[in-house]
Image 1 (cartoon, rainbow, N blue to C red):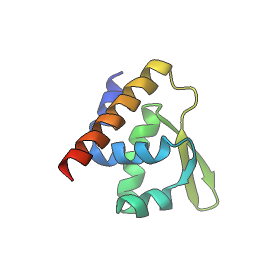
Image 2 (cartoon, rainbow, N blue to C red):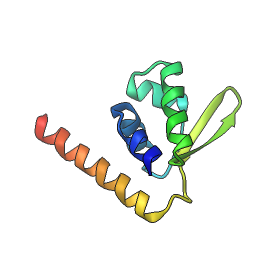
Image 3 (cartoon, helix red, strand yellow):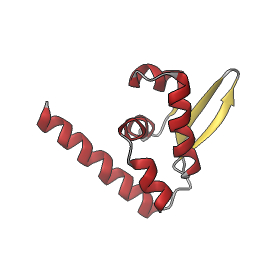
Image 4 (cartoon, rainbow, N blue to C red):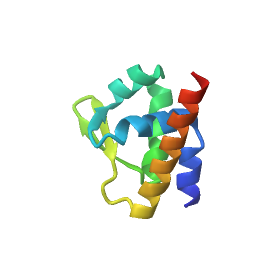
Length: 95
């Protein structure tokens, strides 16, 4: 659980998870562009998410593609869903 909380503590990682939580697979190049993050920084963030068991990756030529880990325990999915919903709610109130 500690690794998951650490993974969720960073706004860039939460933003990446929000993109991946749509159920699709996303290339690291897409995540970099959408989040305006360098390749090395994005790779470090994705490593944290992967090591926490939140995402899976696969190599596709020179790129790596990420997706939500379908084997993630339902209680962890519920926690992540709640965090992402809360963050969207806060963002709407601030905007």
